[in-house]
Length: 152
Image 1 (cartoon, one colour):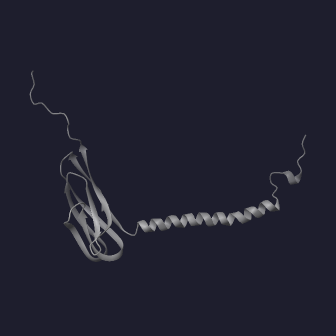
Image 2: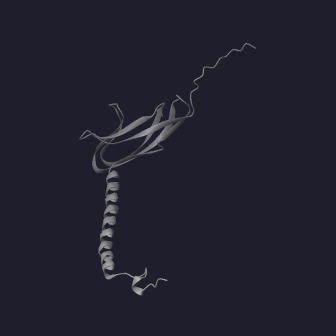
Image 3: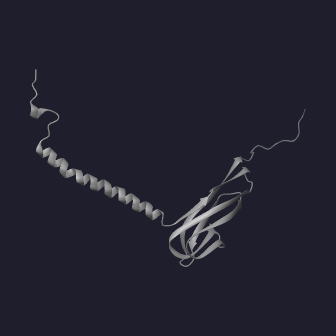
């Protein structure tokens, strides 16, 4: 039978082991807090400018039908300037705001396909943000041609 001495038990800590734990514990806390704060700053950078659409999806009954929806558009940036809202790949502005840092507008959406909206700083001609209004449908178009006659 093996006799366990008090200094050999599992609960025994040597002064050297305690010193290492006391030394490394603050370093671990510092490393985790740096990671935590670095994620917050990245999230803050994302929130510097944004466009929020409510709702961001329009649902038509059948595929190919025009979908009608009033879309609430809210946007904000980190600086004051002149901004305009455009449909992607068009030159005519849908709506503009002068000397603004944020804005909102009710857009009467009517389309049979998905549409991308862009917020552009018109003073510097810079794309600030873009977002998409998705068009979906309840019933897909019938790919099979219907015959309107019968033999019997």
